[in-house]
Length: 97
Image (cartoon, rainbow, N blue to C red; front, side, top):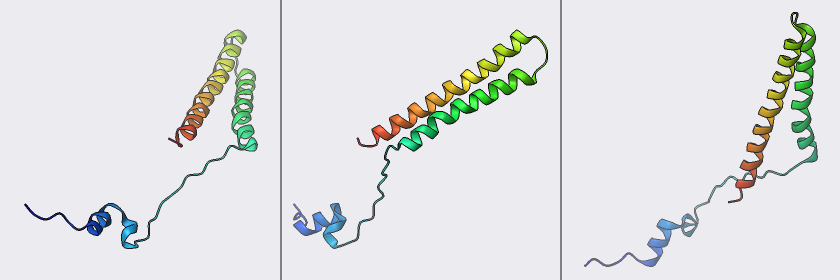
């Protein structure tokens, strides 16, 4: 049966700091900011309102159909942005695990 390696060689293979080798690491630090939340929250709302009004007043034809289409598009923008914001919130919360 061969002899086991000396203790310091085992530690050197497992821990790079045992050889005084510098360790490099990246740390992702994300902090919640009221300004960012306001910008990320209000931008989709303002964008959806602008697109809704633009589509409503720029199209010709059946007014009821145009208005319904305009605000359906606007609602889709709000819904999609909510999903994106929820995913961002989940990713930042799960970063601590």
